[in-house]
Amino acid sequence: MQLDGKIALVTGAGTGIGRGTAHRLAEEGAFVYVTGRNLEPLQAVAADIGERARAVRADVTDKDDLEQLANLIRDEHGGLDIVFANAGGGHPIPLAEITTEDLDRQFGVNVKGVLFTVQAMLPLLRDGSSIIINTSITADMGLADFSLYAATKAAVRSFTKSWTTDLKHRRIRVNGVSPGVVPTEAYTTELGMTDAQVQEYIDRVTPEVPAGRVGSAEDIGDAVVFLASDASNYITGVDLVVDGGMTAVYAGKA
Ligand SMILES: NC(=O)c1ccc[n+]([C@@H]2O[C@H](COP(=O)([O-])OP(=O)(O)OC[C@H]3O[C@@H](n4cnc5c(N)ncnc54)[C@H](OP(=O)(O)O)[C@@H]3O)[C@@H](O)[C@H]2O)c1
Image (tube, rainbow, N blue to C red):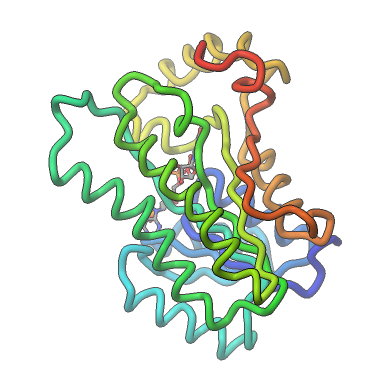
């Protein structure tokens, strides 16, 4: 129970990495606010977790939603100890085809959403609390057609460094967690792959992963638990790569 009594917020928690992480945080004793735009999957996650979770509908691109969420958390728990700014996504778009709408959408959720989530929660965050931002290994990989998405993740990785300085007087630590290949709902919804294409991709990429398998949402959740807990007390401003060793050893080949 590394997080006993802690209050946590996970954005984008109805599916994928957010859902897996919400489970891991609750298993370690935290009470978890699970948020996203669609209430139904959030309620299912909260019901699975049980008494240590609460589903709240909140769009990270909407400052009113975030303010209401902050007020609710303050009223119910008086403060917040952990923010996992996870909501996000994106799909490959060839450079020549990127539109203003694409840019606004991907930067809107992945960058503006992270910024306004953290900004709205700042008054609630207790001294010594932990902010974790979901980045991505794609920020460094130069993957074809991923320039827009990768740039959003490079931007939020930069936040971890600036905010570490901005918040040091409150001993608030700010780190990134950088997932590798973690097959989630996003592979079919955001990336538009069929189940067969997802499996083909997993089979192709697995030999490139020293850990011998692709990642799970819980693998990322374990890293978030670590970054949220006292075990990482002396770690701030880093982007922790959680990719089974893929980019450490085989950078660029996946
Ligand atoms: N899976 C991977 O391999 C991988 C690798 C590197 C990084 N990541 C990052 O990990 C994070 C989670 O991705 P995932 O793979 O778990 O995908 P996912 O299952 O699609 O999860 C994304 C979640 O974000 C929520 N969301 C989207 N827009 C939102 C908004 N405006 N406000 C609030 N919630 C919003 C979605 O729910 P609603 O639609 O209901 O709002 C969804 O539950 C993303 O930031 C992604 O970039 C994933």
